Image 1: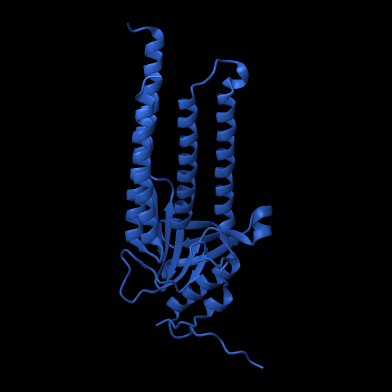
Image 2 (image 1 turned 90 degrees about the vertical axis):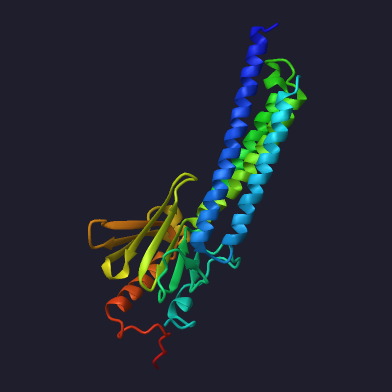
Length: 75
Length: 212
């Protein structure tokens, strides 16, 4: 049976999932931005920063999927 | 062609020993988009490292505040509500750590790619305003009319940093480079480059000999 409490709980879950999705989007966009800049200005460390940005993106994706599962599991 | 012992190398010392945290690099090994064949990058200027460390410190403060809030939540906000599930506390803790790492990386990247390059032909200014906005602007050395320095505030005086304003002829007017270290010496180097473009034969890029 759907109650107000259940609906509120799902609303908060949806909010957290949206937040995680935005976080992934931000990390992805940051990666592409750093990659573009690293190609435009080639310094000694620009390649390394680009790799770090990619690693950061992968970690954020993995973490968001993991936390998403935790949020969706019944309490 | 510029020699390796360009005088600016001697007039501007690097602020940081670490390669990645240098805010002034003379004759760097840098290539950039639309660089002309004979064009050499003479100087790279970033904001003073103090500005970066200030941002990193702010991130640390937010991180600690986040943990304080999480501990408060774990205690049921001072027993105002019932017990908060452990899973929620775990999720919040992981998110707090993740945001801290992201904010550190973001702060460093914005500092690193917010740079000004002085080449033998022009000044290129790259502004990493946000993830969504990066601004490239440039001014030909031949169009530069005036380079002025302002050093506002207590921090600027303490750490020898200031704002460089470059006035150019034409519709664009001027552009400003904020919080750079050793602004007077940077101004001197830029004016040397401007003079070298205007009178190519009169300015030598080799260090001057001391006269007795």
